[in-house]
Image 1 (cartoon, rainbow, N blue to C red):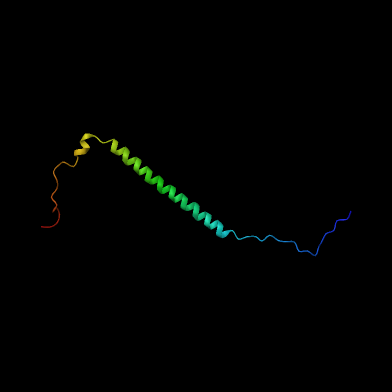
Image 2 (image 1 turned 120 degrees about the vertical axis):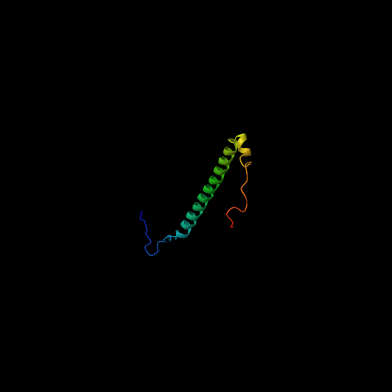
Length: 78
């Protein structure tokens, strides 16, 4: 039983692939997803807050601007 080792055949090296481009693309993608989620959260939060504030209005709030209006030329000059 003899095991023959062929020393003349070069060992195939697996090339180390450059993953910097792929990593940069993944970082940009995840950053974009995070920004989209944050923007959506801000929009939904603002909508919920505005609807909550609208429900808390009293009947007097509907007529809050019914008072005397200021003149349009106030502070314009002489």
